[in-house]
Amino acid sequence: MGVRAVSSGSGKLAILALLGGAIAIGIAPIWVRLSEVGPSATAFYRLLFALPVFWLWLLWPKKAGQVERHPMNWSQRGHLFGAGVLFALDMAFWHWSLHLTTVANSTLLANAAPIFVTLGAWWCFRETITRTFLVGLGIAILGAVILSGASLKLSSTQLQGDAIAVFTAGFYGAYMLYVKQLRKTFSPGVIMAWSGIASTVVLAVIALLSGEVMHPDTSRGWMILLALALTGQVAGQTLITFAFKHLPASFSSVGLLLQPAIAAFLGWLILSEAIGWGQVLGGAIILSGIYVCRRGSS
Image 1: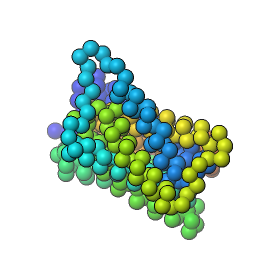
Image 2: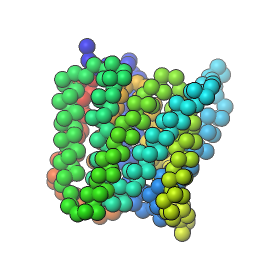
Image 3: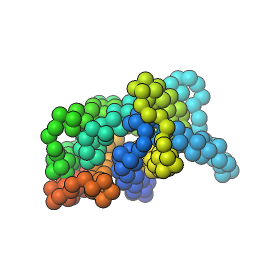
Image 4: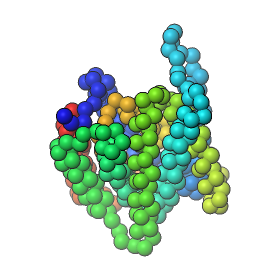
């Protein structure tokens, strides 16, 4: 018996949501690079501008008989806040790395999380990891390495950014496992709204302590931050959080490896970062690996 998703209908919808979320988050690094404020400040505004959307969503009148379940005690709130702290640390380190290395490298290394998530899903959720899935995971990671390696430039500054990006993978993996557990009880809106409070506070403290520039100089700068919140947080994270209830955590994390391929393409299109056949090949291999993982999870 392998890792299995739920019913085919919800499973297909969840896969579409997962891929849509990966694409939306793949756009986020572009906004970060274009931001007029510091890395942690950029992450802070990403959460701050998204919070009203999530809370308006929760307060919006529901259909008859439809009730949104909110945390009933401080223990449940603490778990939601804990997820928010992990996400804040992931965002702070990732956004920092984006200013020290290429978009493709940062996104790839920050998304090394599938290794941690697969181990955690096996240990925490007793997901049975099939050989087919492991083969697909290896293929996807190989593709991501090829995609990133095609544009690797060895320099002390860039290597520092790469190292910081690797460090984020642990926080990202822990966050995804946390969300998987929370989805047994709460909707995506509740998770994003409550955890977003903790994320916003933590990122505000980090940004202020680091002495970063906190305010954009132009209206364009504010629009970039708003676009980041709407694409990366409202669209991307909500779709991914929805998918986590209906898909194994291990497969969900592998599906998110689509992000570096999207980021590399947009880095070339918008930021004129070099892209070659190696990165095209890497993207194709990632897609193949995701497909094999899906076969090993169904």
